[in-house]
Image 1 (cartoon, one colour):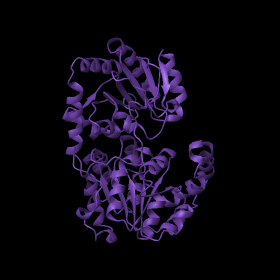
Image 2 (image 1 turned 180 degrees about the vertical axis):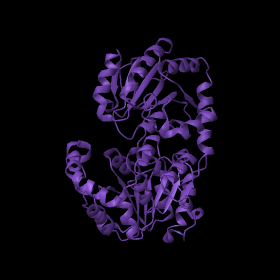
Image 3 (image 1 turned 135 degrees about the horizontal axis):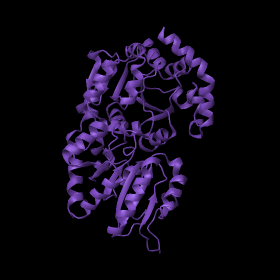
Image 4 (image 1 turned 60 degrees about the vertical axis):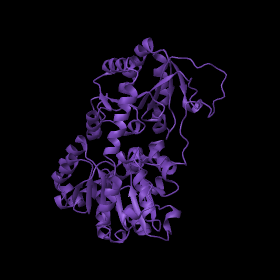
Length: 446
């Protein structure tokens, strides 16, 4: 009954769904793929297919070491990574284009999903974090294709929404072969929604393995010369920011400039389509604003950089390397009740990580960083100012705290290998290759 009602509602909503996709410029690209038109290059793959679904940028970031390790272990397989968003597509092409194919995930219409299953007929379907599409999972089960939740998590908001349809979710989860969850909290929540405890495992967060990931030779990292930074200037990187917290950050920066005249703020909004509004706001606060997209990729400049100033990172795929240039970092979505973004990116580079109190999406990571002494939670912009002011008074503070953050990541790594070992137990075709024999992409820990 639950599936019947779901499909009736989906059919009724289909005109709205299609019009919604057309109305959003970021969703128009790949519209036919979303409605079931399989890309030509995926129709005749002459090797077994492993289909990995990662919704957007965050999920793709989490899955990069995992996909590279799969490629090293199973070079005879074709890896297909699907996304929903444009930022996800760009991340796949930039970071995984040499090991995996990309497609847009079909909308959960039965005919669209069937078209992809017929074309790919994957040996396994791996969904990253929590993308529980009812028709997709049921149709995978009909074809006896293992569906495995990898790096699974359930935020408080998602958990509460799913609880309202708990009976239906129990049926949906019955089609999942294995649930590899990030934390004990996530594991208990998915069991409470109806997953059988026998298929639920707690394996950790694959984002921790980025501390060991070999830098991607296909990407070009930022450098101080690229951003025209003077040798004496220090950088405060504010990454993945939202409108509701940017005023607090800019007011904090204004006060910091009075005691740290060589401090430059690099602000990276979570959604770069907001760049013009962010620039306008920066200028309203009285700062010079330089867009990253307007800077040439060389150090040839005859102008002395002016401080204070804000560099607006209005490009995709460069935030991770921007953190490497930071003296300290603040991660957004945490001073406003968004739930937080990737706290591990700055920690990977040995940079102290500041964040606000709203960390529901990354609660376990926030706890680990704070316990290790590499993360600092602040309640508002005023406290952020006070803590950075104190840090400036201790010359060794940044290096000491940054090293603690980096060590915390290394101590919790190895999740990729653990997940692959568990996947091998439920995907017969993958059992024949021990993880230890892989030509791994993972290096010795720093």
